[in-house]
Image 1 (cartoon, helix red, strand yellow):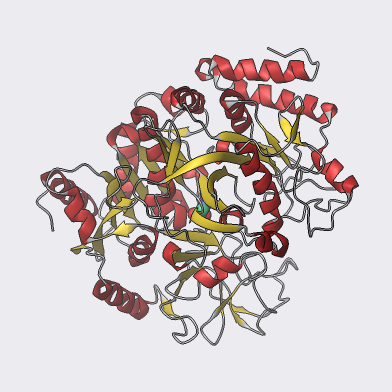
Image 2: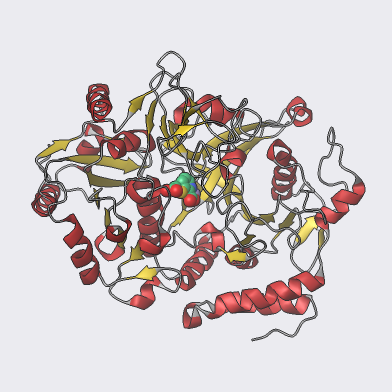
Amino acid sequence: MTNNLMLKKWVEECAALCQPDDIVWCDGSEAERERLEKEAFATGELIQLDQEKLPGCVYHRTAVNDVARTEHLTYICTSRKEDAGPNNNWMSPQEGYEKAGAIFRGSMIGRTMYVIPFSMGPINSPYSKFAVELTDSIYVVLNMRIMTRMGKEVLDAIGDHGEFTKGLHGKAERDINKRLILHFPEDNTIWSVGSGYGGNVLLGKKCLALRIASYLGWQEGWLAEHMLIVGIQDPQGRMTYIAGAFPSACGKTNLAMLVPPEALKAKGFKVVTIGDDIAWMRIKEDGRLWAINPEYGFFGVAPGTNYKTNSNAMMTIQKNTIYTNVLLKPDKTVWWEGGDGPPPPEGRDWKGNYWRPGMTDEEGKIVLGANPNSRYTAPAFQCPCIAPNWEDPEGVPISAIIVGGRRAYLAPLVYQSFNWQHGVFVGATMASERTAAQYGKLGEVRRDPMAMLPFCGYNMGDYFGHLLEIGKRLTNPPKLFHVNWFRTDEDGKFLWPGFGENLRVLDWIIRRCQDGADAQETPIGYVPTPGSIDMGGLDLSTAVMERLSSISPADWTEELKGIEEFFAQFGDRLPREIWDEYRALSRRFGITPLR
Ligand code: O2Y
Ligand code: MN
């Protein structure tokens, strides 16, 4: 327990609302994990996996209607609608507390409320934030144990008077019509009700570390970004840290855990992981941007993960891992589409139904064994390529920021922005084309500035302004790059091999940061000169490399129309500098800007 009166009072208030039978303060101990797992095995909330093959691993299924973040039920509750911006759903704080309060009321009768003190970032880091999540889900407690530093140590660090983010989560009826994910940035509070799944309920992750933290960063002068952090050691032994923002389905976790191709490994390249999803970044006395990974684990997508696409992730998840919504094999191990090996002859699918490969439903569609958004939750320290300094309370200095999306034609393999302001424009114009498998309407462009569209806890116009302000304070700013691993030929085949070979592009990027790689100026930025990307050991023709670097004025003319339309929605909140960059880009293509 605690002597923190604010914390005690808030727990009492939430308990009065939700009316749990019991309140348990989590200490984060092994004994606690064993007790909770035992209880969850007894109720069926968790299934224990084969402890010889997958030691410490458990399995969980969420409700069939509760398998992904629900963006349409996610709100920013600020006093003024314009502070949430066109990028967010908005509710007034009063309406939010009333609506969610009605669902929370009495929802924990017959249940236990767990109090989880947790820290985003190393407990001893000056950049970390403390928080407490109240939940009626053992699954959430066990996930939070992996994804955050949690328990008694954090409660002690909060102390008698310390501040903390207040997170209240309740499963309630897990009815989609009674589900709300509400953020109250002005109260440093999160309320999530009616869901038992991932990003909706592990409140440290998207809710705190991005939505609330981005707002706090805006107020306090730092950045909470949807970025991986990776370290590249070059043959000279220098370590360079890169942060990278990518929307979903762009291979972000694979890039964070990249395995160098043989030819580059032989030259002495090494890659280490600091984080795979979120970066908190501050300006230090040296005028550089320093980053920490506020998380303690990985909450990765299982389908498509295998020893070829991401061997480091596979090695990470062989023990102490929670598997959610994957296929359960009769021998109490797991499988997913795009995993290793052939499908098992039979099993239980993510809905708990009997499954065998090739089975079809009433409409004749193949039944998947694993939900496409099925997940593993695994401790980051188990990752074979985790950086030795990944928990450094001071973070790591960032030399380059890369942003990227899936563009079949538009964007070349890599280009560098002219300067910070232009880089913010490049980040603000980030977009991905929807692929048939992921989203539905093929080719449709989804704009996702800095991959923050679903995660920026305030008006994105102000967010762009904040990025520009940060740039003004940096005397030694990171260089900003755009990458596109997904350019295709006319048959839709990827031109670039991707995966480990992406290190060749990262190598060019780090050499650009050290003024050691050639580039040529184009209207969109600097692109590699022929031969300046190390292609040793990779059989890719000069013609393909030329196609990967080409820039089509006709395609960019179309793109500029989409950019103008997207920016227009931010009205007065869009900084003048962003329109300046839009006009400058138009003119570099010889186009008269639309505004
Ligand atoms: O579907 C969810 O609830 C999780 S979404 C997620 C999980 C881990 C890392 N990134 C994401 C994302 O959507 O960006
Ligand atoms: Mn993410």
